[in-house]
Structures are given as structure tokens and as C-alpha cells.
Image 1 (tube, helix red, strand yellow):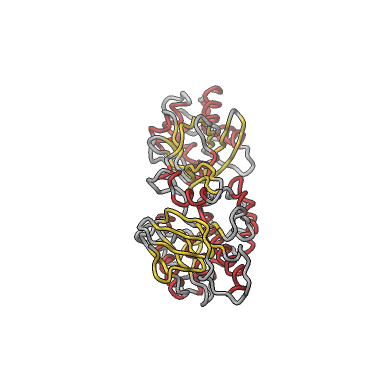
Image 2 (spheres, helix red, strand yellow):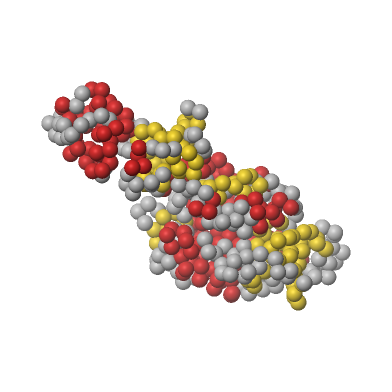
Amino acid sequence: MFEKNSYFDLAIIGAGPAGLFAGISCSNPDFKVLILEKNESPAKKLLLTGSGRCNITHTGTIDDFLKKYGLNSLFLKPVFQNFFNQNLIDFFKSSGLNIIYDAEGRCFPVTFKAGDVLNILLKESRKKNIEIKYNSEVIKSEEADITGFKKSRKTNLSSAENKGFKIISKDGTGFYSEYLLIAAGGASYCNEAAENRGGYVLARNFGHTIKNPESGLARILLFDNEINCLPGTSFSNVEISLYKNNKKYAYTAGEMIITHNGLSGPAVLNLSRYAAHNDILSISFIKREDGLEKKYLSSFIHNHSAEPIKKTLKNFNLTNKFIDFLLEISKISGNPICGNIGKTNKNLLINNLTGYNVKIKGKAKLNEAMVTVGGVSIKEINNKTMESKIKKKLYFAGEIMDIDGDTGGYNLQAAFSTGFLAGTSILKNCANTL
């Protein structure tokens, strides 16, 4: 069943940050935009970001950002050159919401409320006369002839120019559009099997390759390990190296938390995109810029030879419970003064502090992960327009693509930037027919 006035210049699947911002970016009174959202309300995941505070971006440079997206980061370079963090901050400021940043460069709405960010997006969408239909899960889309729908100043349109899309919702409602943007998000925070996610199914039906979706920014689970007797213990600045087949594969640093069956915290989450069964994590609980943790520790303990070892270790912001654990696994009984610790035990203590190894069992499931690793292959998307290289007039934005960032505002900036580029590219492409 096709509704009256069922033709739109652009149909967007997904009312998340990428989809909403793409629609807002198609600013033209003659351009009809429809957003189809499967849920009863928009941007549910946006409301969860930053524990509800909504860390929308970061103050870093483009070069800083490109270090935060793993192996596919260079795809985003022209995207960020087109629309970046200051552009996003200016957008919200001009819409009445100031953005502030913390000591680490993370940017938040001044109210620290994700709902205020969403309200701005919805307000701007209304100003642009964007139509949003909720509870509208798209189950099918295919190429269609839009002759008779399309308004054009041109005559003798080519066959390609008369091609568009027919879109069918789960309730049987149908729409036509000239352009289609899939911004349906990834498979994180979703109980549905990844292969059944609507956005992936639609993209695959148009010929796109889907890289197997898996958990990103997720807890890392360990095989039974003695360290998990310390759930809730946190560290402000650790170094973690990931080893695959005895070769160092990735490295990160930052905060870490021990859980009842694994590890979490920003440093762990950022490393999780690479983590796999049987990989090894080597953790240094002390971080130095010169990388000489072992030498420094040896000298520090020597210089405090008349001091009890527990008091000495407190200098490194370690909890009493963790110090007791550390001494136990280093076979040091009681609380001896540093000068009375034998060389073997001292070396064991230093090794445990600077290279404690744990074996990875896996990582939290997709429905617990913050982002998705995998998705529509970026090799099949033009990163200067966000248009499909396989299907003309088909575009992508946001987490649906095989792009995932670290914690700290990087994923939201990518969503807004890809949404902006897709929206403005579509508007530019159709400008000659408006």
C-alpha cells in the first residue's frame, strides 16, 4: 500500500545522529526528505552515549582523530576535511546549545544531557520540514522507475536519471524516492542477530559486501584468572599490549577496571576491536613516557630500601587490595622493608607490575558492546561523497559502515561528518533537476 504523496527526493533509513544530520544537511525548500525509523522514538543509542552526558566529539586535530579508528581510519580523512569538530560545535551553538570540553579534550553539551542534543536535531529537522515516520521498519528496497514523480527543469531525462527506489515498510506501507541513504546503525546494543539487521540486509541486496559484525568498545573476557578476584579495582593509567601468535599487534594506554570475569575501562574498550580468542594481553600497571618502567621501579625500590614495601608501592596509586594481591603472586610474605626483599622476588614483583599477562577468552556480545566492528565494506563506498560505488544514488552514513572509533567522541563525530557529507552530496547531485 502506497501512501498519498508517497514520493520523496531522499529517503533515509534510520533516525540516529547520522540519519538526522544527513536530512538536516539537505537544506532546500524544494527537496522532500523522509526518514524511516524502526523504533517508536529516534536516536535511542545517542541518549546512552557518555552515560547520558553525550560526548559528541573531541578537540583533537584531524591527524589526532585518524589514529582513533583502527585500520580503516584513512577512509575518514576527506570526510573530516569536509566537516569536522569545530563545524559540529558551531552547529549546536548556532542552534542554542553551547558545547564545553574537559581536560582530556572530550566535548559535551553544557547541560551534560544527551536529550538536549537530540532535541536540537529534531528541532532543526522540523525547521527543514523533514518528515519522520516511526515504527517503520524497512524490509525491502529495490530499484524503481520514478518517471512521473520527479520534478525536473530538464527535458529528455536519461534512463539513469529516471531511476530511483521503491521502499517497503514492515506494515506494507510503500514509498518512492530518487535517492536512498542507509543510516540504520550497526548491530551493537541490539538483541537481533547481526546478519538479520535491516540495514545489512538492504545493503547486501544491492550487492554490497558486509564484513562480519562483531563487538567493538566491549569488555574483554578472560579465561579463569587470579586477577578477577579483584572486581571493581580500577587503575588511572595502565599500558596494555595485545599479542597474537607471540607477536605484538596493538597497544593502548589509559584507564582500566577489573571485572568479575575480565577487564573493562577506556584502555581495554579501545583495544577490543582487535581482541580475539587466545590472544594475550600484557599489562603494565605503571606507565612512563620514556618506557623504562622496569629500570625506574628497580631504582625506586632500591632508593626506598628502609621503607616497607606496601608503603613504597602506594606511591604508584595502587589500592591496598591490589598491593596485597601483587605481593602474593610475587611470593612476598607480610610487609618486609624493601631492602630485605631478595633479588628473585624483587624481579618477580617488577615483572608482575610491568608485564602481567592474561589470556583472552573472548569479548562481550554485540548486544552489550558500544559500537560495531564490521559492516558495509568501505571499499565499496566513495569517501568523497558517501555514495555507493556499486549502486548509483545509494548512500551510506554512520555505524552501518565498517568504521569504528575509540571512546572519547570519535564515533559520534564520524556519524555527524558522514551524515553531513552524504546529505550535501545528494543535494548537490540533484540540484540541476530541482
